[in-house]
Image (tube, rainbow, N blue to C red):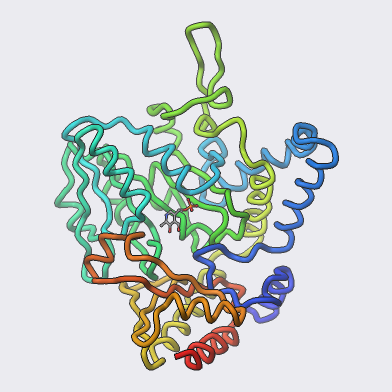
Length: 392
Ligand SMILES: Cc1ncc(COP(=O)(O)O)c(C=O)c1O
């Protein structure tokens, strides 16, 4: 990426002047434009009223759908706003009809919230929940998945990029395998959207959930859901309100035809507007170039970390993303993270039970997680490594 462009992105993000932010998988630094959009909306709410502000911004708030659709190559009517990736995912998952004996196939790197939901539905309905074995690189094995498929498989649900490693699951290959299988294909793209190009048509998924605050650089408390139009016709949201449906006669209601039937009437409108602006900002960039830059920086970070005495990089897989996870053999990672924080260097720590199966498989405990975005620099990585060496 052209260094002038990196400078421009940093100038457009004031936070880069305060901190070395290597916690982009936690929440990225917002571009100033996104912050200003949020402030302006909140200021207007306090100045003239919430409903009145909504009326002023209604057109822009509605632009959210075409922009989010453009980001993942979907149609506007296939997009719903949600207050988090988890809520988007849950609205879709709990709306799927399951019966005793149905099978849910999933990955061994699944996020805890998703797995807890599988287990709850298992308890309620008697479905079986079956993690697909990994391939030799720690990714979901497409060959193993092919062997497990039968007519009882109702859902294949996979996390694209897991919480705590650089791993990328082979979602396009899974999509190809499922092309002629009736199972619903659900992707948790919470950590991939905004980081790498994500195209729902290429992947062939039926449902995808994403968050605003991570690689999309939007505000906290924002996210979205994609549901393929064909599936929209087949499933009814597990919960409906007067926004998702109209009460048409004393005994009847009519659902909206589009994915917005999965939304609530009352939402965080400032957050939705902020996410709209963050997506617009992302769409102005060359997604492939940003993805290359993230991979380059992450490769450098892994190499540098690997050379630090007392640090073990724990990322499996061939192609790796911007999330770098590591063990410290000398000092607890929580202490390292706290100490770095005092020096304005942000990383995070992930607990073993956020991806329990993977943690048990690889005997992982608490891991340090340093995650880069395209606006980070090689110099920041050098400073982080120097500080880490000093701490150890
Ligand atoms: C893989 C994965 N899925 C889902 C989530 C939850 O996202 P949110 O907090 O926006 O609900 C996370 C959060 O870290 C995650 O790592």
